[in-house]
Length: 262
Figure 1 (cartoon, rainbow, N blue to C red):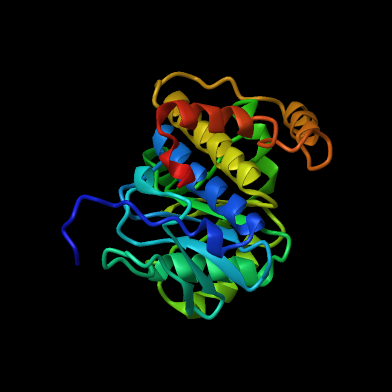
Figure 2: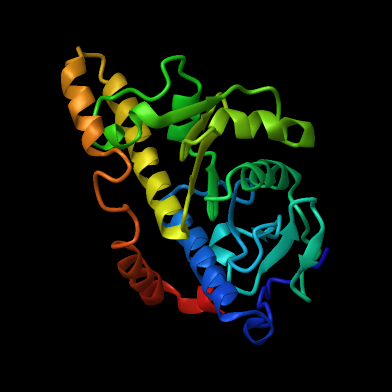
């Protein structure tokens, strides 16, 4: 493996479609934003996007790069069987992350509506995933997710392809899943929506932990109030969160470091 600190990846823009290039730029932005908002875990979690021109292919990060290092040209393109179809010419010795392949291929196989997937190991996400109660409806933000959260029990690191059917079955039609004793997962019809779900889910977990740590009585809401509030966040009841916010988030990244577009 190369020890070079020069991670400049030659641009592949001319060799992919405009639709794939746009997906790559948005995926690189998603990685950078995940790091910006404190949700990265060195090289150990993953975000993917389904290839816009082939439902059996998806874009996946090289295992070894930090989230802040991702660029549009740094992603592999793999199929649902784990075959690497496109890889950066200068890959620096980094390859396929098995757990990433297992989790993401499982969901892309089962959910044709899903175009992007995020998985994180944040402190708040891991802590809530370790609580028997899971996510509680303590805050308005949590009401976006509370009645629609799926759960998947931990049986060991997700490196066994035999686990794919169980993962997909536990997710079902949900767009949010808490991997018990592990972390958080969100999916969506676009990268911006998937990121926004993770951002909101993460903040819900942070707020829950902060409230539980105060060692004072919680102001729990009546079931009728929770039902009314969560219904107001039901799919179709509000705008798709993430799309309106995305251009502003890209402007934020452009001010910080526009190299994600390379």
